[in-house]
Picture 1 (cartoon, rainbow, N blue to C red):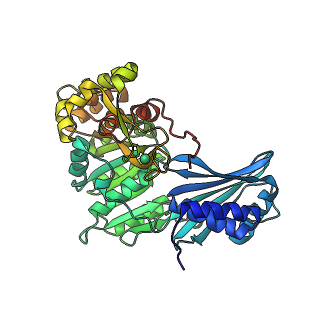
Picture 2 (cartoon, rainbow, N blue to C red):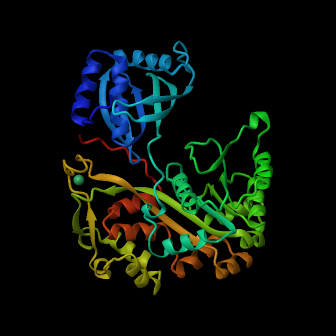
Amino acid sequence: MAEQYNLEQLKKDLEEAIVQADILKIFDYLLTIAVEEGASDIHIEPFENYSRIRIRIDGVLYELIQYPKQIHESIIAKFKIESWQMRPDEKRVPQDARVSAITLTGKEVDLRANTLPTVWGEKLVMRIVDKSKKIPPLNALGIEGSNEEILFRNLDSPTGIILTTGPTGSGKTTTLYSALSYLNKVEVNITTYEDPVENKMDWLNQSQIRSDIGYTFAAWLRAALRQDPDIIMVWEIRDWETLDTAMEAAMTWHLVFSTIHTNSAAETLTRVINLGAKPYMIAGTFNLVMAQRLARKICQECKEEYSLKEENPKVYKWIVEALSSMGPALATELQKRGIDPQRLKEGVFFRPKKDGCPESCGGKQFKGRIWIYEMMEYTDELKEQILKGSSWFEVEKFALAKGMINLERDAIFKALQGHIPPDEIYRLVKHKDYSAVIKMQW
Ligand SMILES: [Zn+2]
């Protein structure tokens, strides 16, 4: 029977199970806490004199508990036996397993587990796929102002290529699924190529590729195009073959979605040219390239206002410069997003309260996440730049002067709205580092 979730009680139960070295109970409590706290990963790691368990919530690792080194080996061994896919006696090489589990609160999850031999013993990491999690609607992703207009305008197009780019963990899958879900109607046929299929949807024709038996990307595409598709999603453009077929599909009246590995929307240009695309092909098929990041959201219950202008004039100056280069588009953008221009002028921003609050964020200062988006729309004037043979840098400069919302600008608007603190923008966009490890303040 599903139990009521109580974090404090479960933490006590977990400690108790560790004292008693009751391995099965340790896993039950640990998994339940991780899933209920919305964690994406569990790390069980040994050191010289102790072991610890950390969980990743909203992109950041928190320490859950430390325990005596003596029981570490039996914890890992027990997991290997229960998984049925790992050899408990083999400790010298990494091993993988996929298992289904159920929490004490009755939630079904899939775990992708792997071990790694370290000098202090084996480390076990489990990625949690919560099957009860729904794809958020497109309007819940924080796509606002002119970005929102651009996205919906391009989703309405029956043909062309829409790409999203960003590092692992920036929510590209969510963006693509949300877009496909928005486009999903009885009248359209949506076919996807995924490797692997992570979330099975009952409204999509998802194909799991099996290169080992000859079911390759090319084989899938030939078959998929005969299946009368309107919309095609290819998980990632990695090579010329994929890019070429994606462009071909777009030219033959299909809307094509995919992801690509670059730092920004503009840099995608160099990437596709390096893969072999000619400027005229890009101009003829590309509609929209997005870049995205996932940021931690300040706890809305305990956030506080402060003057950035007084406390950190350097960052304030940088913010003003990033926005004023938008020219006349700035005033319109502020208005579309419902931001008082006075707030920017006075430099009033929000930051998390020291030690957070017990009610909402449980002392973590942040709660939930928010997406940061950059949208480069392939307008006629942008295509002219590309056909002229401009570099990605020149194309980006051109688009920015026309008021394109890049990652920096979107993050700044979201800081003005109180979703992220200004120093977080710096961390996210300037240094491209989002893996800070902070102590859990439970
Ligand atoms: Zn709070």
